[in-house]
Length: 272
Image 1: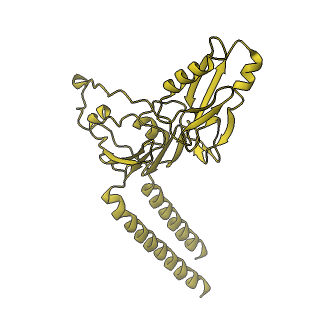
Image 2 (image 1 turned 60 degrees about the horizontal axis):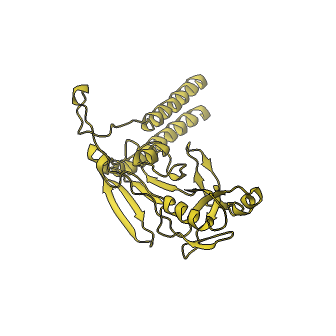
Image 3 (image 1 turned 90 degrees about the vertical axis):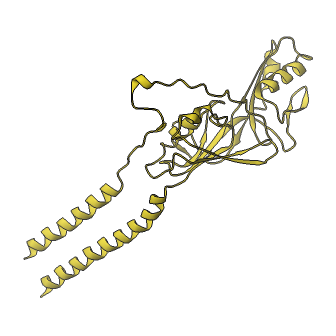
């Protein structure tokens, strides 16, 4: 009698485990559904060139200046101090509690302060324009300086129905939507690929919200295909996902209740 009860409890546990494994199975859905599944239907699309990212207040710029004077180089580059930019993930998707980048912090008015030349207004400029401006000003004090400028806080946030929603710190200045989604582990089967929301802020803090259809290959030709610093991608759940969320909870409660009832009955019979 006791052995039969143990077998029954084992079957119940196995049944619950199988249900949970089936409900958590991850699947993938193809992008660009408008392209036929045939090599004879290859399609060439020309993406719109990405507009260069513009410097905004609170950006962090890594500015390196090399001259023929080693001592001056130390002074010129001492402003590339570590700056804490908050909790983000690295390029590989690994979680990083606090991201620290090295560079000059752009102040609220859009200036960076450099040795020798003082405050330089960089707000609204591209990294190339900042490089040329700094080269022009430094050339007054040093002959043939070599200046390099790049963003070190190029952050993208991906939220919603993706496997790893978080903020990512990217190493390049020309990422695409698929770069960001790839870092986030791709859209889950429950996410809407035909209605991905992009929230973008301009240099003055104004918000722009657009929707992109990743089921269509025309997304590649969209001016929003290339991302900019601090862009936010939001993947909305499908209607089925919203409806099934409550259904799953109801099902789990019913299964757990049935298992508990069975265990109570078995325990009562063992006590008799």
